[in-house]
Length: 279
Image (cartoon, rainbow, N blue to C red; front, side, top):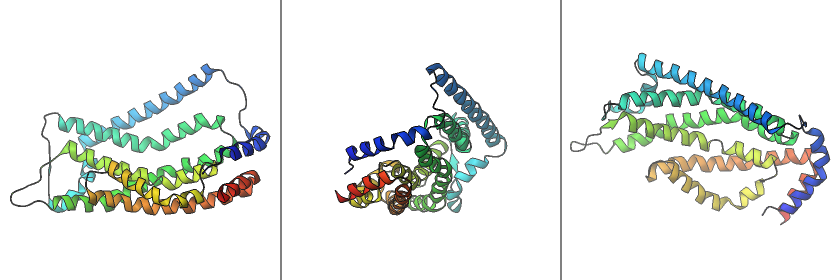
């Protein structure tokens, strides 16, 4: 259980130091904040749009390189992708361009978000958030690669194993792309768990003891999350729940290391965590 009163007391004791570490502690009118937000949004939209146009043109003119990469799990069975509706190929190319644009521009978008919120953060908050800004993209890509090379080939091979002389697979471009992107995004998202654990620990919201104590409840939440993020079958859900359990254990170790670092730099936080563990 988190002791909010103890955290509030520790925050009051450290408030003068936090005020000194605050950057850009100069009052700004609301119009200035809105103007800064508008400039950041305009830059993000322009970059996303330009990359979207470029990716869509490449996909249409160069023999579908991105869609070919997505359909590689089907190569062993030599199953083609078909389109059922007349407009399906065109809108599939647009979706591929949009997904590719989001993926490639994500570091730039994250940087713009950081530049907007950074002046409003205290030094402690900056130290807690910057690892997420630095590691979120590599972890997301790592999760997507794990899904692409490990989970998707196994899962698709399992489903296509029901093919026989009476039932033949017919896969449409739109539905296949939607399922594949959904799985890649889900695995990329769950690989952010250790980074989120690090941030919450540095902010004093979470600690390793709490994660250990609530491990059994977390397992239930993991399987529920795997059921929501994957197709409704036990095989794919297990393929996602397994890495999630491993990532949860890694998060405990990350939270423990982050907690030690916080205790060295913040004696008040050390007292709060000691009282929390005693309770």
